Length: 360
Image 1 (tube, one colour):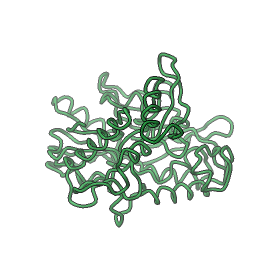
Image 2 (cartoon, helix red, strand yellow):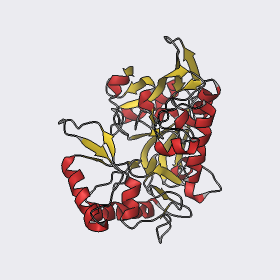
Image 3 (spheres, one colour):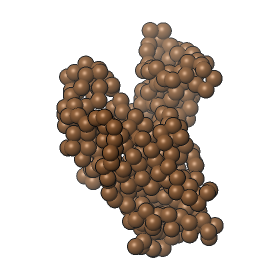
C-alpha cells in the first residue's frame, strides 16, 4: 500500500543532498500504487515529479509544489528468449547496480561495464544511461510505461524509444512514467567487446577483446571509485549527480570553430579529444568531444570552487555539494563553468541531470 506524507524534504532523496520540501510525497511500492498516485495528481491538476534514486536530478531549494511519487517497486523476472539470449523484465524501482551485479553473477553479458552507476532501473532508458563503452540502448528490448495522455499502460519497443546519446523519447517530457524495463542479455561468462580505451588499458587488453564478466565489472568499479563516481557516504566527492554536463556533439561548423580556438589558445599542433558520431538529421558528419577536457582547459581544474559547491577533486565533470551548500550554490558554479567554456571554445555545454524547478 502506498504511504503518503506532506512537506517531505527532498534533499534526503537525492545524491547531491540538495532540494527543498515536496508538498505531497507518495512512497509507491507496487506498480498499481505508482499509476494510482500519478492519476490522482493528474485528476487534481497538480504537478507530478516521479523520483527514483535521485542520482540524476537537481531540485530547487524551494522544493516541489506538487506530488512526488517515489518509485520503490522491486523485482526481476526472467522470460523466454531466442538463442543464447536472456530476457529480464525488471521493475522500475529496482536498484540499478544490484541488477547489474546479479547479471554478472548469473553469467549474463551486456551491462557489466555499467557497474557502480547509482539510481534505479526506471531511469536508465530515460537518458540512455551509458559508461565505459556501453549504453543501455544496446540491451533494452522494450519499456513498459504509463502514458499520462491516453491514461493507458503501453509497451514501447527499442525503436519506439528513439534512443540517441543520453536521450530518448522519455527525456524532456513528462508523458510517460516508466514501470518496467526489458533487457535482452547474452548468456556468457565473457564480457561484450571492450570498447572504451581507458577500460581496455586498465584490463591490459586491446580494444575489442573480451574478458571475464567479473573482471570487467571490477575494473569499471575501480575506475569509477577513482573518479568519485561510486556513492560513498565517507567521500564528499560522491555527493554529486554524476557527470553534470554531457559530451558535446559537434557538426562541421562547430568543429571548425573549436579547432580554430584550440589552435589560437594552445598552438597549431594542439589536439583535443574527438570521437566519430552518427551523422545529424541533415546527414552532416559529426564528432563527439570531451566535456571534461574543455572544462579543464578553460581553467576549471579538479577541486575548483570558492563556495560551498565545488568541482570534484577527482573528476572535472562532477559538481559536488561536499558540505552545507544549496541548489543555488551548485547552479552558480554550473553557470560559471558553462559560460567559461563557451567563452574559451565557443562550445555550449548542456546539463545531464534533470533540473526541477530551476534552470541554467
